[in-house]
Image (tube, rainbow, N blue to C red; front, top):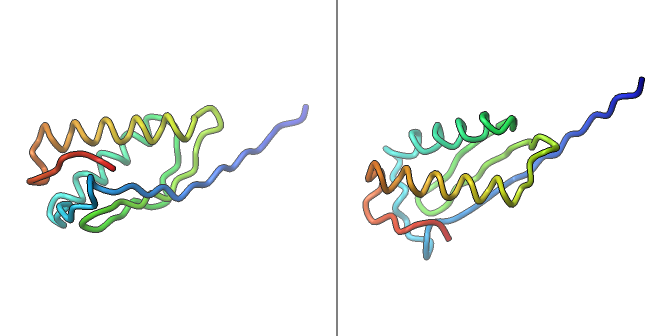
Length: 96
C-alpha cells in the first residue's frame, strides 16, 4: 500500500493597523502563546513565532487539510478578540 508524505511550509507575516508600533515586548509572549495554541488545535506544526512592535512572523507547516487563507483569517480574528478583550496592547485597533 502506497502512502503520501506532504510537507507545506509557510512564513506568514502580518502587521498592526497602519503599522502602529503598539505590540509591546511585555505582552508579546502571551500573544505568541495564544497563536501557538490556535495552530496546535488545527494540527499545524509551529517552527517559530516572533515579532516586533508593528508586525508578527510565523514560520509554520500546515496540515494538508488546512487552507492557508482560512487559517490566517481565524488567527487574526481570534487574536484580535483576545487582545481587545484583555486590553493586552493599549491603542490596538486591529490587524492590517
